[in-house]
Length: 312
Ligand code: PBG
Image (cartoon, rainbow, N blue to C red; front, side):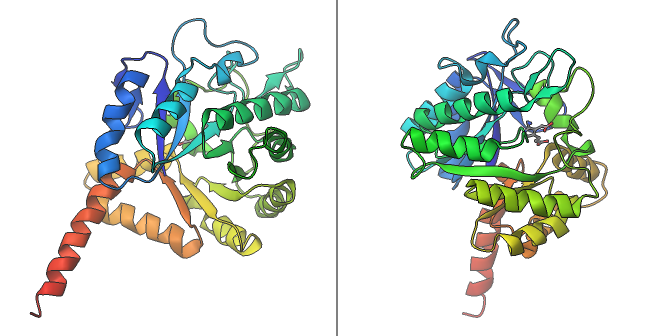
């Protein structure tokens, strides 16, 4: 599953300094960007809205589900132009709030969990109504999975839209390049009161069980490489569920820069990380390496075919 950054300048096709090789894309450029990847076998994307125009962000992230905003327009376009493409949507307020936190804040600066959950659930339902196959809340508020599931049921969409929970999402250093790309770094404080501390194996296991009980259809672990044990735990706890892992922006940038510096061959290193995810129990991998993987998998098929032909 390929993460895509959609921005509100319709003509944008901009490099992202913190994520070499990735783009911030406007709606007019989206079809042209996806077409060659789709032809190479791209099967799924996850969309992130990245508003950059002045005056779009406010205290409540009101534009999260703007019908004329990049995400809703993006869902509709992709569904129309690429009928076989699976379209997931990240659901969060942090890209749309002027303070950069993932929910509503009270006057004293603390998070208003319940008001945030109500709004996030509404946004998820609106993405689903626009045609998303999957909604993936990454805000980490308490009770959001249950609230979104209820919203999808009331809208008559729960049977056809999957709810992917960022279930075990850890607070840490690896989201830095994303926050640059999405312009969503918190203006004060951090996210450690709503994301898990890195040593919290038990909390992660409980979070996975809670999200299963609230109606998640897919469970995700994030980041990936430092959390393979959590991935294995999740695969065991949720043995009948699809298990997703997100190789996040910092992991991507780290591998890319290390390869640039001659530390290792990028292709070998990336294959090794993704095989590690599969070994640990992942059945769905979100990675910025998706376009490169499509090329590499094609190359490998050719090499395999040639190898198989040799004995003849
Ligand atoms: C929004 C969100 C983040 C990521 C996915 N959804 C940033 C964060 O939690 O700070 C990170 C993805 C990445 O680093 O590639 N809440």
